[in-house]
Amino acid sequence: MAKRFEFRLEQVLNLRKQMEEVKVRELSVAKTHLLEAEKALNAHLEKEKEFAKTYGDMANGTFTADRAATYYDYQETLVKQEKTCRERQNDWMLEVERRRREAVKATRQRQLLENLKEKKQRAHAQEVQSEEQKFLDEVSSIAYVRRERAKKSAVN
Image 1 (tube, rainbow, N blue to C red):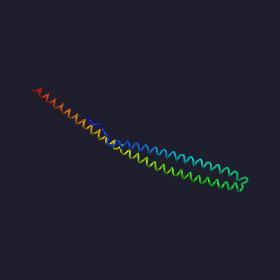
Image 2 (image 1 turned 135 degrees about the vertical axis):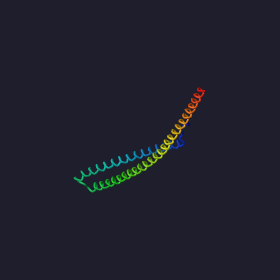
Image 3 (image 1 turned 90 degrees about the vertical axis):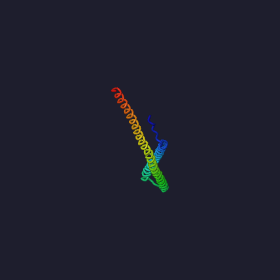
Image 4 (image 1 turned 180 degrees about the vertical axis):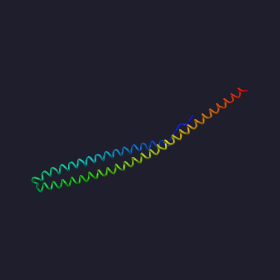
């Protein structure tokens, strides 16, 4: 009977699979944070547009010094917030890219071991087939020799 195929690095392969799953989950979390940062930036940009429209409409009427100072302060605050939102978005974009590279690396490491396992399985299957063929050849040789002996003894 042929021996059962056993991949000695199966535990390492399983570990690599788990590591890949972790890296993919981390990438997913980073993408979620990036989407949240983009939503926050878009909401902030909408807020700025509304503010500019509101104060643009007011500019046609009376515009006092107090109102101008308030407008300037608020506009400055909005610009700082926009800068912060863009920095956060950029940070998450970099983080997503870093996590993507890690996930790709983990995938490659797993695929490397899976390819090795498949190669070993093919070699094992070929070895088993060769052993079976040798066994069948032996059986047919023995049967042939017995038939020839039987023919010789029947002739004698």
